[in-house]
Image 1 (tube, rainbow, N blue to C red):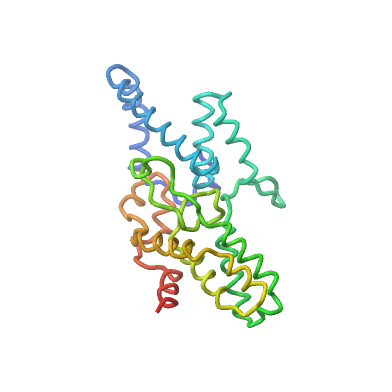
Image 2: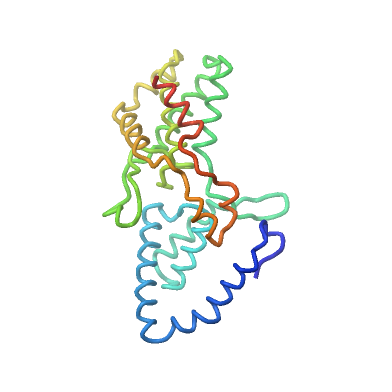
Length: 260
């Protein structure tokens, strides 16, 4: 069931027919032996990935859609489990009270917003007046840097190195983003150059090895952002409309120019 207000892009007839066929014809077959054994194995692998994502994002998950899916999966597995309780504890991170009621938003864009706020202040040439603010912003950028890679054999879980990178939001999130890492490196480098006393003190406290580690992660991140074929074929068709493949984004190009 889907409300018309949520249907941003109407489904092609062939897509609806395919889904109906899979549900009414394939689903009953997979629930019977011997296919049920394959289904059980697939569910086991899926829940392992759910728990891995939960633990490495401190139960925030990569975004609001996955958060709800992982929450439901944990509840189905065991409604009294510690994992489900931890999921519930982090739901408020997604809540947003609007003028028309409670909404579920994306986790947040704290790092992204802070980076642009710093750029705006620096562009005014009023760094002396904004010294305390820039000092706090610098401390936030430092605190937001990811401190560790995903646990265990993260390559087997289709994850990439993240230690030293920046996320879209906070350190808890754990998912490195190339643009946000570029912004984090840009702001750290820009604040290093300031003559404001408070910011200079804060900058000196930043371990340069962490800056180099962030640079190393950024260089190793894949340059191609998305796969057009996959995004076009997936049920969440919205991605095929607003995500386009590109090799370097504006923040990445700006960082390269800063190094030059």
